[in-house]
Length: 173
Image (cartoon, rainbow, N blue to C red; front, side, top):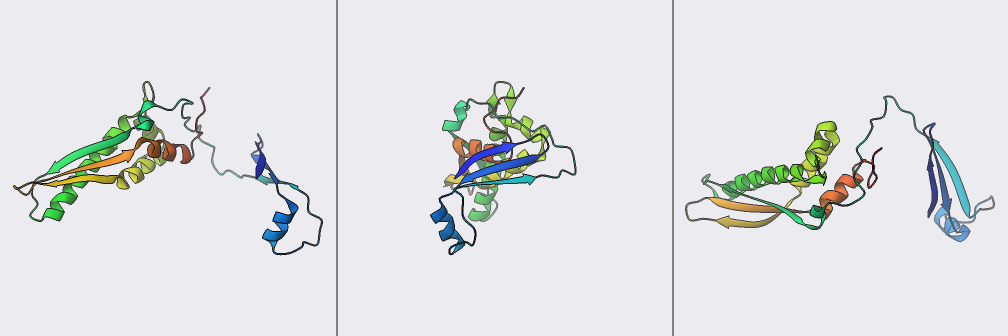
């Protein structure tokens, strides 16, 4: 397992792994020709063609919405075919879900919409989440109209934001 990870000012990273020699031998497919040490160290350097962005920092305390389902519902008038009408209602529900996600606050006065305005990566994260939202319910009405509800788990939204490359769970200076 990883025992140490040090990010340095010169843009190098030192990595330290603790490995049982027997496990390393097994993974290498036989006995190596040099003695194995239980602690391995390595270093890598990152080259940057453009200046690094300041990044976005997620607050240390999780917002209350993380433990909730975020849902949206939309209706569509008859489009002739029931499945076509349902798809139109689903797309409208997804648009409403996107709006609901963008309104979610990371902390008072700071919403996910602000993330999308500062860096296009976050808009892509939100778009992917919305496209993967689960359809909860589809209702077909006698006049040919349809109502669709979609839902996304708040924990999934939080996890995706945290894994998308921002500095998770830290406070900015």
